[in-house]
Image (cartoon, rainbow, N blue to C red; front, side, top):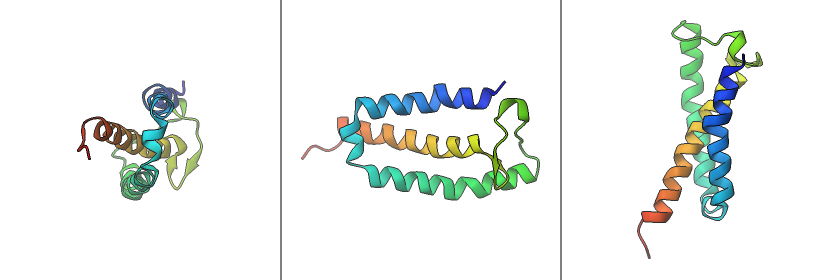
Length: 103
């Protein structure tokens, strides 16, 4: 029951929280880039997901989600879209800070 939010918690929210706790100062420097990444991911993925659900390419069923829907998608899908973009960008920023060009 509620497998999608549980999956999001363990594989998306928890890693993001750990990265932000561990390397807050490094990530904070790139807050604007991280925010724009989330906006871009949502702008591209929401229409794609809505079309896919409406055309029955994929679906979301009640026992796996909370059941809160917005614009034809469950709330968990918005968390997934934003979270994956934020996680990927956060990892990229941290790797750049670690191995990128040194001035």
